[in-house]
Structure formats: structure tokens, C-alpha cells
Amino acid sequence: MSVRKEMPGRLLRLLSLLQSRREWSGRELAERLGVTERTVRRDVDRLRLLDYPVTGTTGTAGGYRLGPGTQLPPLQLDDDEAVAVALGLVGAAGGGVRGMAESSMSALAKLEQVLPARLRPQLAAVGSAAEAVPRPGVPQVSPDVLAMLARCCRNHEIVAFDYHGRARSVGRRRVEPHQLLSLTWRWYLLAFDPSRDDWRIFRVDRILEVTPVGHRFTPRILPAPDAATYLVESFASAQYSHTIHLTVHAPAAAVSETFEGVVRGIVEPVDSSSCVVRFSADTPAMLLTQVAAIAAIASFVVDHATPETAALIVQAGERLQQSFAGLGSDQPNP
Image (cartoon, helix red, strand yellow):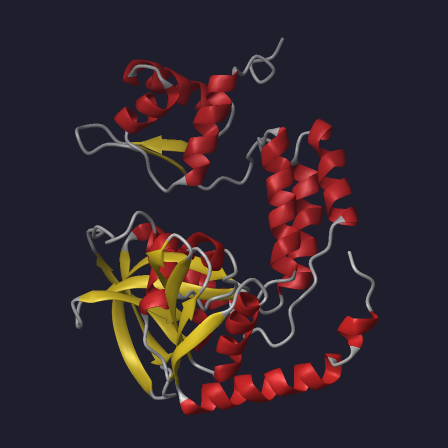
């Protein structure tokens, strides 16, 4: 039996780790695999025998990385990973990245060719049976900008770019990129801005002229459990042009479950059956959506609302009342 057919599951896990990050230390790999560093070195040698270009350096700062190669063996994915990749490519076709529909389907076709034979039917089935529906009006992001920002996040490399702020003014920013995040079909960059000595969130569709500066940085500790939590909490606490404050006659947990999209209200319990909610957004229409969702589950008192927001919600309520008037009496009792 060939060496390739004898490859144990541990080697596949090692290969998967090497593919997931730019560089690993021997100690980190040993901890992840539950083996000694000596075993890691032997397994790396076996991968090299299988034509995987694993490079390494010795010493306390040494590490391993999977280098580029022109004659790589078939891509090694387990069943769940193959399905995850296929679904990810299908989902990308409906996201906010320019030109991704055609590119995603092309990538699926190429991926099927390099996977082991047993996984190809699963990939083909997902690709032919699944489809993501694009959302109209979502700002489109350049794939080149996303790729450049992702590379700088991975390599901890300072990046500079022109940015269109909320006031539509353009300014040059120089930041330490931390992570790219996607929320409701929009892409965001979480980065530390040394000039402001604080973390900032940038909409990627407003980023232009991205240039790696060529200097590395030491990643800073994020003031949140993770990047996704930081993003959601920042949206909830930010102050925009339009606001509304409500006292809702429902438990805080029930109200929080109604939130959708990027507008996340700040909820403070009053007691077990009521809470105070504060919303802030760029447009009154975004607040209308959240208020309507709360109105569907509970009554509330409006403590504060910016005039334009109040006018829009009152107008929408009057139209709804006129449109649905009389329907309730015709409906049978449950």
C-alpha cells in the first residue's frame, strides 16, 4: 500500500492546521494535535514526502508554514469541510461583493476537480441544488479591496486607505487592521487607529485606494470577547442622527429577541416585566422597522423621539390602521 493511502488522520489534521494560518510554531501544533514536538517534526517530514511544500525554521522563534507549490496532491477536506466550502461559495454569490456570482460558480467547478473522488458528488449536489438570492440595494464591495484587507489582517500589516465617512467627506486613514466582518450583507473592517488611539469600524464599501504600508504591528487586545461582539455592541451604543427611547411593557430578553439587522437597541431592564430601550440610526426608516417589531409583541410608552422619526412612525401607523380597518371583525375567533 502507498504512503498516501496510509496517511493517518493526524496528518490530515496537521495539514488542515497548516492551511488555516500563515505560520505555526512547533509547540502550537503539538498542543493542537495532542502529541510531542518531535512527533510534529516527523509528521512534517511525512507531508514533505507526499509533495506538500512545508517549510520550517529552527530555534525558539522557528515555525512551520505551507508554502506555494505547483504539484500539490488533491485537496484534503473531510465531508463536513467540503459541504461548508460549497455552501460558503454559494452564499458568496448572493452577498455584497462585486462580481462574486460568476466567480463563485467557477470556483466550485474547479474545486470539484481537485477533491478526492468520494467528495465530488457531495460538492456537485450542493452546487446544483443551492442558490443564494441577492439582496437589492446592498452596497457592493470590490473583491480586490477585500483581499488586500484580509491579507493585511492576517499578516498584521499596517494599511492606509481613503475613506468616505458618514458625512461623505474623504480622508486618508492609516490603521492596524484586525478583522473583516459581514453583517446583513454588508462588510466591515475592525481596526485600531493609532492617530485616534482607539478602535474603529469602517464600512468596506466606503474604502478606496488601499495601500499596505509595509510595516508590521503587534496585535492589540480587543476590548470585547470577540470581534463580532464588539461590532454589535458598537452599533448599539453609537449615536446617529435619529433616536427613539421607549419604555416597553415586556421582559428585556423578549424585546432583545425582536432586533434584526445592524440597528441593535440598548435594553435596560426596569423589572421582570418591563424595560427601557434606546435606538439610534442613520435614517428614521431603520428605526420604524425596530419599533414595529416591538409593537407586535407588547405595548410601550415613547419617552423620546427625534421629530422626523416620530412623524414617519405616526404616518406609517395611520396608513396601517386605514389599510387593515375592518378586517379584524371579519376574522373568525381562534
